[in-house]
Amino acid sequence: MVFNHKLTERGVSKLMRGEELDKPIFQILGFKKIAGQGGSDRYRLNISDGTHSHTFAMLATQLNHMIPDGQLDNFCVIRADKIVSNAVSEKRVLIILELTVLATGTEMKVKIGNPVQFVEGGSASQADTSHAGSNLNRPFRVQESAGHADRPTPNPRKWDTGFGSDSEAVMPIRDINPYNSSKIGVKVRVTNKGQVKTWSNSRGEGKLFSMDLLDDSGEIRMTAFNQQVDQMYELIKVGCVYTFRNFSVKSANKNFSTLNNDYELSANQDTQFTLCTDAEASDIPVVSYEFVEIANIEVAEKDRIIDVIGVCKKIGDLQTFTARTTNKELTKRDIVLVDKTNREINLTLWGKQAEDFQDDSNPVVAVKGAKVSDYNGKSISCMMSSSMLVNPDIPEAHVLRGWYDNVGLHTESHSLSMSRAPGGTGTPWKLIREANTMNNPAAQDKGDYYMCKTTIVAIKRDNAMYRACPGEKCNKKVIDGGNGFFRCEKCNKESSDFKWRAMANVNFADCSSNVWATCFQETAEIVFGLPSETLGPISNDDPDQFDGIIKDAAFKSYIVKFRCKMETYNSENRLKHSVLELHPVNYAEYAKKLLNEIKECAPA
Ligand SMILES: [Zn+2]
Image (cartoon, rainbow, N blue to C red; front, top):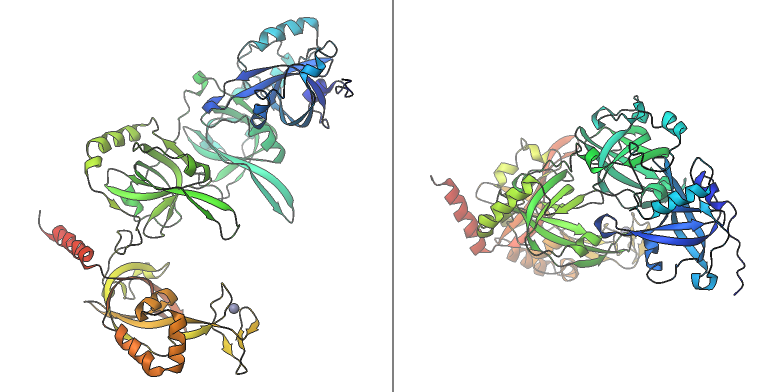
């Protein structure tokens, strides 16, 4: 076979000087597997442009398969369709992200030209080649500490300008602010690395990823954009300690960061990072948690970000569903955590984390940055920014392990996360009199949610049923045009069609008081015992039958979840009750609850 592609002349030296080349062509003269952290192996390639060869070319992990597959072999010629060069410490590392094999090694059979090992900052010579040859046999480390001068011929000028002893100083994260020099640098552990996210809006498109950095003084987030994503993402490993220099400092956007820091860092084109040795990293803590006991999550407000540790007591099934807004298929899994407070909570895992979590040996699970939800009682959910560790080697985990194996395993615990059954411990039980007072502080802001066993004593007949817009997501009341058409003001549409909806004003009583509350569609249908499609025409055509339905609905008892909220109406404050859930009373369950309350009241 005749090989028609010329290797890119001086391609290696140009790339190493930081020049950008459009799809350079190289010959592969060898490769070496490097065992990576967490089982992610990397391949380092020795690439040649016929004049120079260079062994600091990394193959992006998604291309790893090309080596065992035999697509990449010695002497093959490749076109690097996407390549980034990245200054790491005083070394430059090339990463090949996409490539096309132009000719296989079997076709080529020989080395093109007589390339010599490229030496950064110096001229290549035969002597360098021999040194580089021995270099190839050593385990490769992309990032070496600036203090380790065990590489060939470091350029003395560079030591003066960028790596003098002064610039090796690092500052604690606590002291970072936009006014002190970011050149001083930080020595930090990467505790979390988010996924690469892309954005697209009127101002353009791009990508970014964020990572959480920690030292013994605090934590801070660093975000890298676009080109810096290419340069950093593959190289940064969670759990490793790096020094970062030359970054931008700005006020933290609290919408995107849950870390306890008013500032955050951005990587820029001058940002350098260096992997620290184990000895250098020994003074940097592993991950700092501020665990919230599960019992205390009960009073944690919605959307609060917390750290949680617990024993995984149950694993739910993997669930797949389609997101309504994006039409994307999502997977999730709920697991149940329990801790020494004998309280359980549901933790929702998403995506790959949900798929991978199958450990049914009751492992200890620690989550940093879980979000509190008040859906069905209290639950917590992992977010993109959360990090989860299974059986972490931290004191809290060992204590929990000991507690669970000796005590927790045999003790009944109570869940803060309600199943669909009423009376879950997530929502407090109250009497109507307790909630329905102008002094109820919870009602002022977000509304006071409470459970109550009540009996219906009256239902307002008027406007219990109304004609609503037939639009799928629109439930707006339509205006009867009197011409066979009904108008929805919200959709700005007229239609001969409508759907019946129920909105009942119901008076509920308990032993303490009574209150008018609104039951919307689903709960109103339970009250009336008939679906809206049936109720609507009856209310319209047969008032006597409708009165009968209302009569039958009265004096029935339910466990109700109310929301009580202060609303301003005609510049007057008043409390408005609405019904969120309505369940028939399960008297066995309810009696158990009452018995427990009696036990708690009894002297020990
Ligand atoms: Zn509508």
